[in-house]
Length: 175
Image 1 (tube, rainbow, N blue to C red):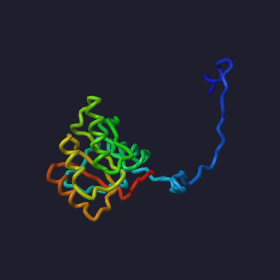
Image 2 (cartoon, one colour):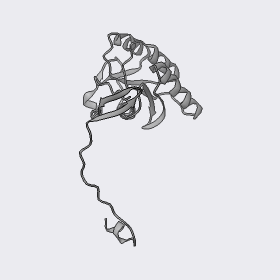
Image 3 (cartoon, one colour):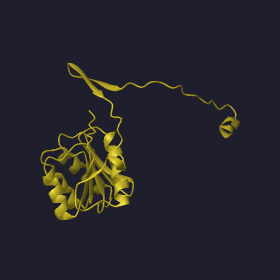
Image 4 (tube, helix red, strand yellow):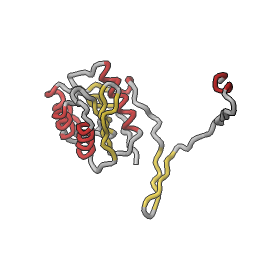
């Protein structure tokens, strides 16, 4: 503060504590969408290791970072991260497959190497199609909420390809 105050004509604003709303309200055609704010941020203690291959410490960091980005992005979203760097995201699509393909195309167009990257999804994978596409792109670890009655199909694919997958039990869905 002393350094900031030393500059002539500097104005320092002090923000008062304010209570933020607990819900998001958006207008839509002929109505409103009211949605509770998502106050959960995935952390290591929320992870369930569902595959035979466990993510490394660096992969866990990437998975949690990707999950944070996913949480704050419009659903359906897929986020691709490597070495704590956002490579690309596919957002607001009608399906996770479309979101994943969008993210892979963006990363490729920017010249990013997806080999060894981490993938986060804000919603579960009811079919193994996304993990198959991710595998072909070089992605080696996945974080998702889990909860589909067909989770095992994606888990089995990951096990067969030595891809690590963790679930969080929390669906971060933002309209």
